[in-house]
Length: 120
Image 1 (cartoon, one colour):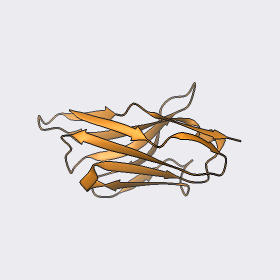
Image 2 (cartoon, one colour):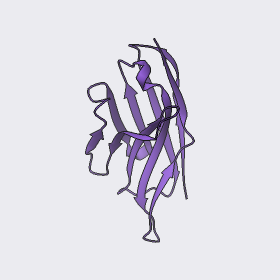
Image 3 (cartoon, rainbow, N blue to C red):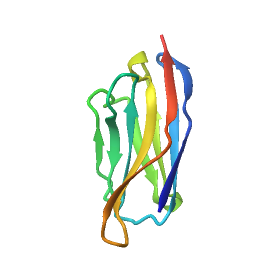
Image 4 (tube, rainbow, N blue to C red):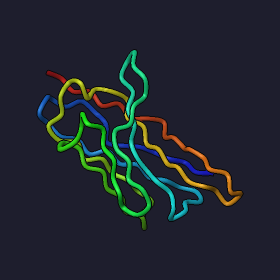
């Protein structure tokens, strides 16, 4: 089993910055991919950024150039640096980990979410 715990959310003014952290515990494989999703009220959960096991990144168009995902594998931690935030970034941000477990079954794991609110 894998557990993900996010931190770093909060209230920030438009134009400001926040850095989210997610620590994974349990049996984490080096082939895992970690990332961030978000869900705003009344909307579906959407991809924000993903970092795979070989270091390739994928970003939503809406956050390109403003958000940066990074990972410290030794700490099983993934970060999301968010700059130039705007009210449209307001959402609950969820940490995600995808890997094939030791039983050869691919699984998706989610954190409990952290609220990010950007005031105008």
